Length: 299
Image 1 (spheres, rainbow, N blue to C red):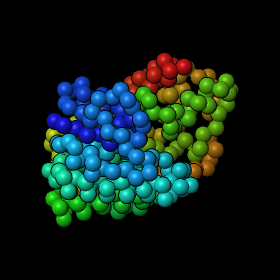
Image 2 (cartoon, one colour):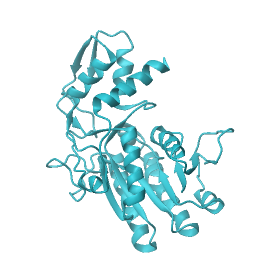
Image 3 (cartoon, one colour):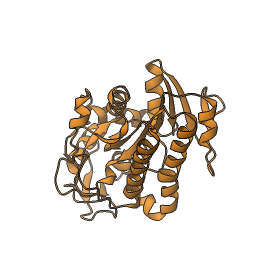
Image 4 (tube, rainbow, N blue to C red):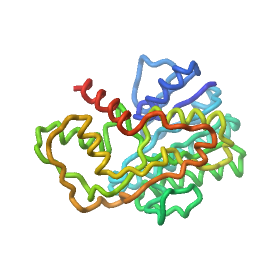
């Protein structure tokens, strides 16, 4: 397969590039970062990305969009930028596909943020979406655009509602924040929340295996799919596992208040993902071992 990965310099995109190369597919990277050495690489303009040039120059079987903003706090501070990166660019990509390559499968990485605070767990794909941040709302808009292009132009599309993915090279979110605080010789650190919030964690390798199964077996009918492990893990338990793996002996204090835009409890229903053959390979502990090893090597 010829696979285009937009956002190939980011956390998920860079892993996806190596993953599909190792599977002997022909992989093309695409990002705003200048790279004079990379083969099969398209450089995008930061100001006004022209996706039409890319799809006119090369045929692709699959386009995996890993680009966009991925920060709830930043979406509150800069909602226009978040909209442009997570909504406008998705429309531009799909319009380029419509014009030049309408048979190209398009996968957009959406987010569990579209759910907000669901009334019950686990979260199925068909519940009412109630995002609690501009980021979540914009991801919801992007999903609707994928449905629009499938319904009106027959473009094969799917939105993947990614839950809490982590792994080497991730420099944000819970485990990275813990690492930064624990590395400053602090005997006590504070974390947002109560510790009883929960997330459904998925290691980067498991995510990529899931994406590959989706490419091979999904219907691409403008549909959506949860991508997680179907396990609710309390933040305090995840923090304890990281502390154990990092071998930090200090004290954790919880602020007892949540940040604006952060949901409280998440657990995905992954019945649809399991139907196409997904099985978890990395437990949270095993994934954290890989992550901490990377943290130690990068010092």
